[in-house]
Image (cartoon, rainbow, N blue to C red):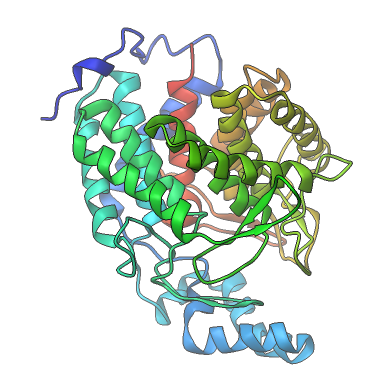
Length: 419
């Protein structure tokens, strides 16, 4: 059995019967984690994915037509939309279950954080196994470690190939190896972290957006100006620049963060991108931006970042939570959608609340509502979580990438940050 690294052992280990003063969320989270880990052990590390239909040959062709000719594309895509609604398990006919690097990263980080919270070294072995899988799934195109999707991703701007690293995935790999090093002291994990940061600094293109701001692309092969992508790179280079004493990385991160701040609208929201038609405002991408800014704020203590967090979280609570305090998928929709709620919004909302509750008191109340509703209505008998509530019915097919792994990690944070 692995041992906790002596430099990181904590005297604040959680006792199941004395979870925390934060009730009932911590107790609910611990119960859901217990059942989920049992499900995960039985289910295994591979799963279907929400993008399976669109990653297939016919589905990808239908999506490309949709982006060029809306009416013809709607007709071409309709059969896949219908299958997704009425028979979501039919996606196994077009694509086999696979591992997802971003899911492996969330599981690794979650198990390491749970090991620290409970002073239970058995979880370290689980975390190490997920890190080993991450090393195997890194992109073969680059010497430094980086990860993307395990499938081709058609978009209106072209197809992102399966072996193309994405800046929206890469930081989770960094955090997974960081969590592993914190508990094991393994120097190899630090070397991987430095390589991940070097990839983000050297291979992700940036576009100048004013005298002091730069927008980060999604991948080495595009020049988009997506707000959440810039927030991810801004955080990664800020934390890595701080750890490795790289002033150039800190400056690059500062410029990405400056782009995110200048992209914030007067109402506190962020459009998805600043370079074209993707001006929708949705729940989990808003959470992505806010959580990366929250992490930057913890490192830099920058007041302009705090101001953006306060305004952004006010918008989130007013427009992306309903009157019952539960997540709404969109504040501004890109198109007609057929789901009412999404598990991803719960996972990211819970994670964000754990990051902000010390600084924004309202976040604690949001956390209690989200965890409570997740426990009551989304946790299934076998331990995994429903994926979506649809206009009629719900999808209960488990996808590790969307968002079983993120929900697991979010609940671990609830337990680990309880005091």
